[in-house]
Length: 506
Image 1 (cartoon, rainbow, N blue to C red):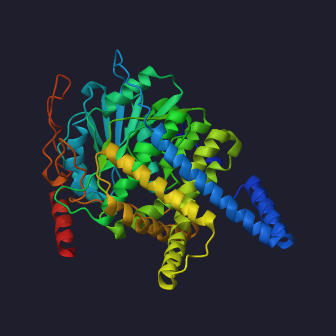
Image 2: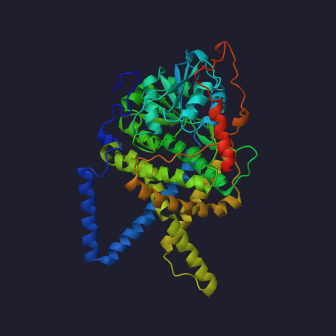
Image 3: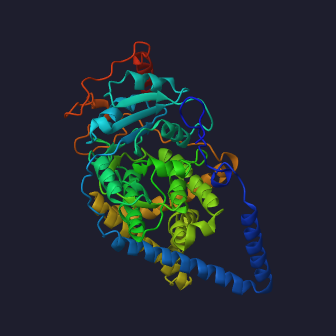
């Protein structure tokens, strides 16, 4: 692996330009394919316009109906339980990474939740990675009491200033055989590392990654809003239904941005994270598959807070959709390497998400207009039956996946959430329009979701971030003391100033 001379790997690792979103535009093969398809469609439209339009429309209906059928089938496939594996004779060394930027006020709570992980302390390495251009978070991280197994490191300056670049730096410092990533607001189940380590120990080396389910919990004391409920249902359908189903089939899938557990050796062989892809997690899942590795899922979850409101949700969703377009473009540079299972998985995840986001608002407007016309005139709408069947199949399968997923995640999913879901889905078209513009104008810009003191993931045994105690020290493997605060890292003034600015803005 490439090194920058200070013991840590560079942001690019060994990832070739052909495998990275840094290379913009189409490859020669993609350009030839696009030009050939465009020429075929143009010639067909000139020769037989009505037939061509009919074929395109019916092909779209069939594709979306098959996606709906797969989503419904995933509810059954996901019922197959994950294997329960015995504890290994010796627990492997584990590296836990938490990259932070602009999150000074949540550092103490994060350390408290990481220290709640149930794993032998002499087998743990914790890396809290901060950026040199973020002095408030740097000061807060060094000032916060922490157990000896967690260390704070400042990433070397470099471009791009993204989360995946920071993760590649941390990968160069990792001493564990296994590695996992947590975000600042995460509250992982304490037994998650043990479950992952046992699964890896019982599996062959081809199992490279295990994804934990991400579950949304509204911050304690906060009223659950429209965005909170719909976002939680969306996550439940993805992490409780779709990803487990794909794992049971032995297909690849886009990873979540957090709580994915890797074999360090496999991750390094795959080239690490793509520092230029704003959904590096989605890309990495398919790249590991192309390298011959398999993915799996865990049962012990990580709890996260939802975006605070629509204003916070739109930039986050814009980044996701922009990154999905980047990932799709990169993965289709190697379509044959994905195989038929990889291509189907790509279709049922990234392609479906992008097409649906592009068409949600148009479909909703078309449906409302037809129903309104029916209500005013009293005449049934003259609309294609195939269109109504496609819309109905998509809505019903989405409701089913959300309902079953929410039940597994321990969340309610009632009529109110069901009836307001189309409005939430239509919002995705707004984010999609933004994503297309950003992909052209700012392809590598990272829209970070803000997290403050109120944005906490609450579950049993986890307290709000502003009330989190100092890390508890437990067991024979616990360190004898908390690491003292270095005298040259005074964060009190910076934290007070940050709080005063937030109060003034409120």
